[in-house]
Image 1: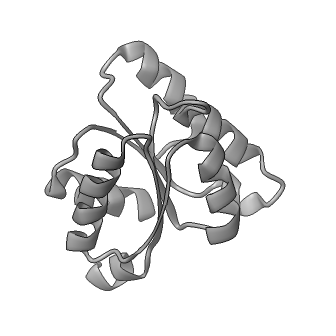
Image 2: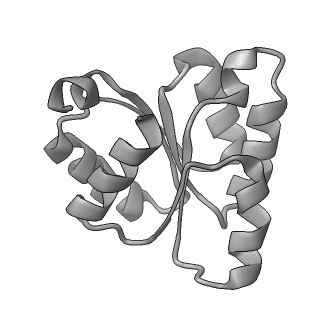
Image 3: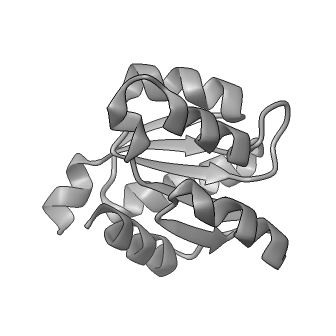
Length: 129
């Protein structure tokens, strides 16, 4: 599994630079080194098209485009690759309404921020298997 993780291309989307840095450090500790970043959903769409990630880690609450709208637009892109790319949503929002809103998007995981190393690793393994 470590070999598989080391080859993953991950798109990290969060509007908080400190959170992106924390998650980036955790990804590096897991052995993932091909990481692109975006500060909101609009930038993430551009990065996703260029980078074609194997996995997306996205915050939910961002401006001007939030994570929910980002995933909806990602899934709607003409390239069928994006209809199935695994997405793990990361948020500090624990409301059932938010969870209910993201589940129909075909996400592969939902994490409360800030993630721990073990929780992030487990979610990633589950999402890419």
